Image 1: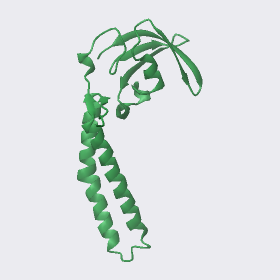
Image 2: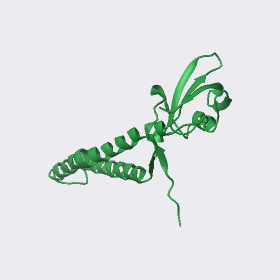
Image 3: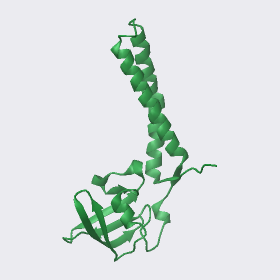
Image 4: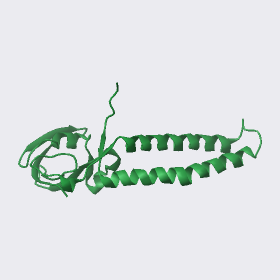
Length: 159
């Protein structure tokens, strides 16, 4: 029997997915159905670009709904405020010092929530994989396409 792999995410990511599924079903899906009906009214479907574009968009919407609903059913919602400890885990906010003593802060989040510009990195990213399980004061090294990076874990928070 196959096991279902849980997808850790924060409540914000879970809520965003639910909202996005609702928007796709209630706004996008009906709009594309209307576009298909309108294109059908133009006659010959074999050379009807609007019809083919609308059908393609319909397929994209349905695939996106399926993907998001799958993620929702496999979601393991984690509240970082309920976590504690000395180790970096999913949901932790980690304060780092780079080689030039520049301070950097990242929160380890789910794939759908990741946005490096706002300080949120996916738990599957190279940096997060290097951080998870480590303690305050640990030095980490990991490789990115630009080369090796080194950080010192200055502080771990659960906020």
